[in-house]
Length: 111
Length: 110
Image (cartoon, rainbow over the protein chains, first blue to last red):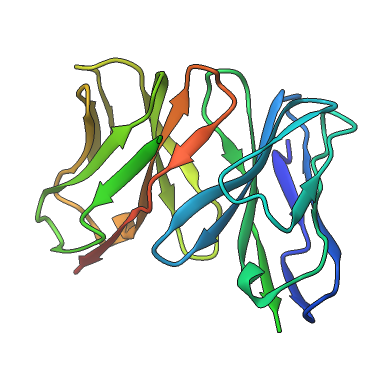
């Protein structure tokens, strides 16, 4: 049972480039979320989904897009990378009312 | 506005020196309060869920408690392997969002 799988683990982008962070879960969870983690600020919610075809914005959505075409996958797209998006990104999935399971994170640097 | 805060930001303990970490929350429609442990370079790992004031949960040297406004993570006789960042998070009754605090970085010195 792989749980939540994120790819890539590390990425360096130039300002203005676009990319997609991948997230897949094999636990058949309805709910999935993307967070970014910056020093001293904890985990901040970017976007979340309550099921296939349903997404919504979290606390810091600007500059990011998501889609959820299947239960398993929840990719996060950076449209035009900026240095302020340098961070560690975590994907999480959970069942209604239960604890969240996290991926190992993607460390993104925008230069 | 929903908010979760934690104190202290960092805590340094001698091995065997017990202490508590604090989590204060103002989350409208709180369904559950979670505690996670995070090691450097890894994703958060689930520890406990608390659902109602007065509830307590224990795991090895850790005990989590919940009141109407706060949660505490008590660490009894910590060991160096307990060194990590401890995160507190609130889940809303809508179930769709989990709101995290900034974490407490714990260092246990041999």
